[in-house]
Length: 243
Image (cartoon, rainbow, N blue to C red; front, side, top):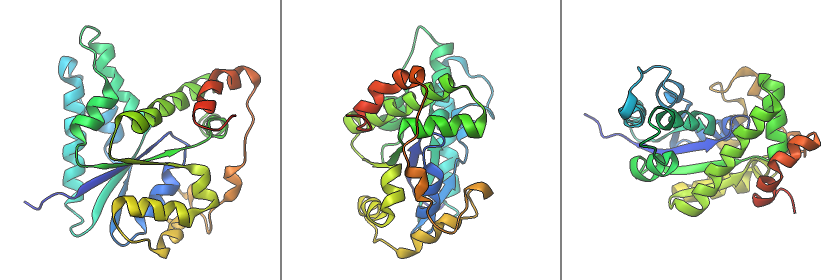
């Protein structure tokens, strides 16, 4: 059997810039990127039976095995997958089902299972991310705020408790894509390639996400009703979006 080359994950909140980043990196000649492959079926358990006390291990094991198998289809390239923090949160089902034997899902998933994979985390201003979630999916603003807050929990975990990662801001990717992509390439130990900028038209992305150029308008600051701004104010400040 061919050796797998599953080497990285792109992680961020839904509506947080993961699709654009994945689309750009996928155009690098040395990289092949999956777009949320196996994450709903495995991490969120939609394609697996209820496992009870073995739920976490079964879901993560199925995800890792599927990713490794998929990576073998692309020999000679570094294979990665982009997933959302909402999909990672699906692993919390294990703790709901096993209140007497809860686990730290972030530490166990990233530090014990993804031991050789590099993590590329993309963070987006919560005000813009929350507004986008509400407008695109119709979810409540409170639910969107809580989902963004979990992405901040992941961001803080990577900054403080994980060794093999690089964290970027979606706004930096929009305003200075070459510098941002160069830093990611350096992290992955591959040369920068100008072709990545053409990834805005990547057909792996949803049609509504495809474009002819990077839309810098998405970097504009958004506003939230005061009630919801107060809900995420501390996290915005911790992430440097508020002084």
